Length: 361
Length: 43
Image (cartoon, rainbow over all chains, first blue to last red; front, side, top):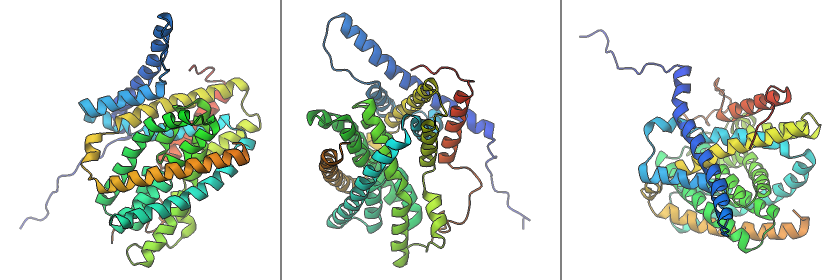
């Protein structure tokens, strides 16, 4: 009998190799983002020189469209995948830097109004999505994932909840596909609705931050309307993100009480683990900007750096959206997500219009 | 039952999360701009 069996093992990957693997994808994000910026500028210049009146298509939309075309027509080559996956890193770094454009007073005023709106939105969305999941007889844990994904913060909330309630991989893939497909749809519909209803920048930004589930798509939906709308969309969405720990904890306790997940022993540690740390970074930079730590020019530089980070994010949003893969996930979770999202969008739109009249957002 | 990361929140992961990395890199960039190492970022 052999003394031991030698199992084939993958050699450990060094940090430098991991870093090198990111370069092609990050370069692709940068090229697509920059191409979007060039397209916006040059198409406008061309139209102006020919005295044409054409609607301005923002670099945000170009970057997303180029990304969507590459991903859905040619597919994303394996060499680019690790780097493209960094789009979420750029998003979070961009949000931290965006703190320089918010004085603490603005964060306090807008943040407290948005906190109130976010509470109402989360309660309404969780209740409605749970009702729909039951109506369509989805698996209970899939219903939970869809409810959390649409109420709090899209894919990150689904991933955090999946671990906490011990949901199946299949359920989380269904929920993520539904949320991503609906996020992509919102990019094209929200700006049109916002303009049709003549929403103010702040009202639209608050709506995008409340109703669009993924942070990247919420930021992009805001930026497609205006720069100012993007700022507010990020603030409202960040407020929503900050509550992720509480919602996931509530569901973890619920499923543990039914014996279908392990009990949470240390609730404070659980909350800290789930808390999105970039919210703290955003607040810190906002405090520094408020106390005059940065000069006016430095603030402009920070804001520009934040825009570059978002540019990479928008390219990533397009590249990671693959409609063929989403179609394979089945129709029922998508139908529940679709009906739920339309109801949430209408509900939050009414909420924002009401808040705009009351608090003058 | 699966032994997911949520089962014991007290268990700490020695590796920094993506969130933390994003905060650290953004703050490092802010400090470089404040210190004047990076003078101008065009848009």
